[in-house]
Image 1 (cartoon, rainbow, N blue to C red):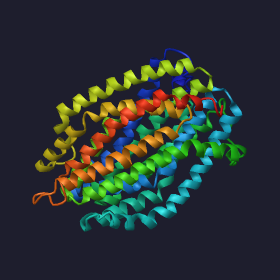
Image 2: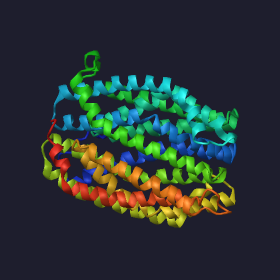
Image 3: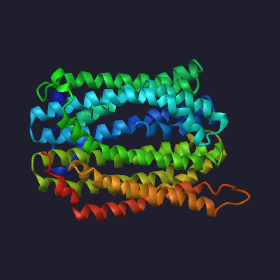
Image 4: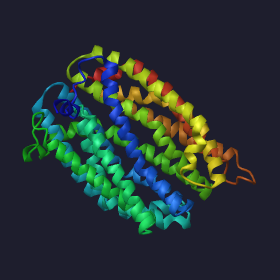
Length: 461
């Protein structure tokens, strides 16, 4: 039983061989990220099979707006992970307790804001994006239900970030696996059993997310040996709120920019018609799984770097950066090969329409090599964020999105207009994404080597 208890205990990443510590921490995160991706993928598969391709398109068209309004939680989550990992590495119980309490309180405030604003702006934004009349009602229902139950999503993601900052990526994984299984069961029950359609998918998701959030709260309440969680620590203090916002805001802004870009590109995608919209949904679902190792290693590098900077061990940060890059590049190369070989089988899970399968496989092959470039970007972003430099990743993401991705997408679409493709060729959106990933890796490497993140490393410890 002692060994099992150790598995669920916080992990000290400031000792031991870096690549082993990174791998031990990243694997549960990878499995957890894959499980989280199953939320949306299960939604897409079930509505695609039991309702139809238009329902599949509806769920996908709602996602850019949903992502835009969730940026508050992205910021809080990133800031939470950095603060917790650094204070845990420094063995500062008071600051660690205050940081966790601040995260919990700010998450509650942000949840209320989204519950009020979300349903008010959902349909106007869908109309602004030229969402087809055939799917706009489904999109609106999906978004409204999701916003009403946003607290479960918010608290799971924030508290899982806190657990990972403490070095415990296993508990977050177990809770997410439980929630994912429940989500799939409820999806089938509501959609196939009760014929609730797209709204049933949203309802299943918010119930499952609420369960995972409750499990995270119960876990934190049992970790009294590491920090204090009481009403005093839940009280907002300017020092901790300011630092959380300072660390998290750039990541929130980054996500907002990415979401706005998705909305702008979604408008272009919508102009290509329902078939291309459904294709985009399928490719992005597969993309979500393919990108998971990159995000997992990036997040692992954030916690690893944060703890070692808290312990003032910069030599381990440098060594861990090299190890993390090698691991991320190896896994991404393998995934790219698998996508190129088995892409058709992956796509066939979502639909039986031959034309849609062919189109989706073609678009996936355009993106495939980009995952290797993203391995570099996400790993180096993780190190910079762990050091407290969240501004540099924000600026790089803005360049990738505003200057590279969106202009390239619309330029290619404009130049490829024809009688067969009056609004341009649909490849334009995927080529632009590949270009932004590739150039982004080069830009990230350049700024990482300049070393501004090193100056940030010990500024607030």
